Image (cartoon, rainbow, N blue to C red; front, top):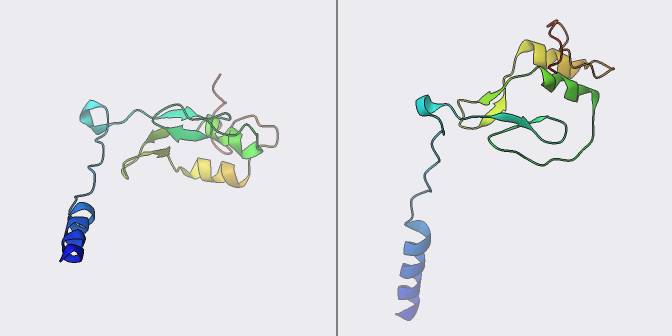
Length: 107
């Protein structure tokens, strides 16, 4: 009897809960503010984030990439053909110009 009661209490505590509600996007109109962060500016997140401090040539591609709220409900990089091309063939000098865009790196 005690075992059945214990199992019933355990089942109610573990299985009876609904999943925690997902936080709604923070800005009116459904847009969450996303920022470029991390040591090398390669993290797209809703708040300042710490990352390791190394540098790779492809990191310069993110200087001209758009960090924005995604339909999936989180921050992420806009996946453009220019970003994909730059990541496949990053500028060796770290100039930050995405290959084929002609856009200079922001100051």
